[in-house]
Amino acid sequence: MSDKWYAFEESIKVPLIIKDPRMPAAQHGTTNGEFTLSVDLAPTILSAANIEVPVVMQGRDIAPLYMKPEPAAAAWRKDFFYEWTQGKNGEPHVGNNIPPVFALIQKAYKYIYWPVPKYEQIYNYAQDPFEEYDIFNDTAQTNLQLLLDMRARYAYLKNISQKGFPV
Image 1 (cartoon, rainbow, N blue to C red):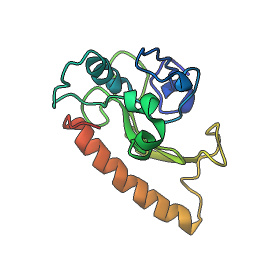
Image 2 (image 1 turned 180 degrees about the vertical axis):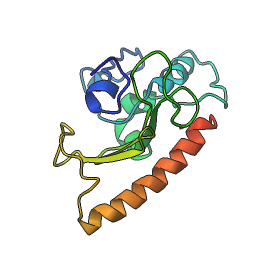
Image 3 (image 1 turned 120 degrees about the vertical axis):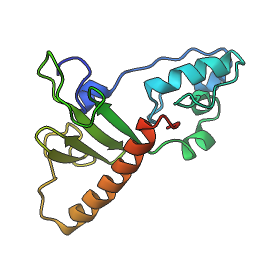
């Protein structure tokens, strides 16, 4: 994997260690598998400093995930939209060979869309945690409904994310 450009786990996952004096002692040294994004860091830092988070800022304060993890996780994001592009939908990157890519990442599945050359992939984490087997072309009827559902959710998240709405 070259840097952090591809929609595969080895590329998009980044470890994060938090030391917050407000954190309950029982939470020290614990891990959390909820989806947090880099856009969550600014709202988290602003909230910790008792500074109001601007409504136009994307991302969410992640402190509830380590302050009161059970209720916070129940209301936390279940998926997210990923993109690597130069701004226009599928425009090739100038000066490098890295293709644009978009994805819908969920806990159980990942849908990846490569606009150049219009190629789609789906991975099932439960059966394939290393994303080695693309099930997009699987003929199973359940995968057809999964594809339709993921395309619809992908389009929705892409639309609100690219318009700057909080995610």
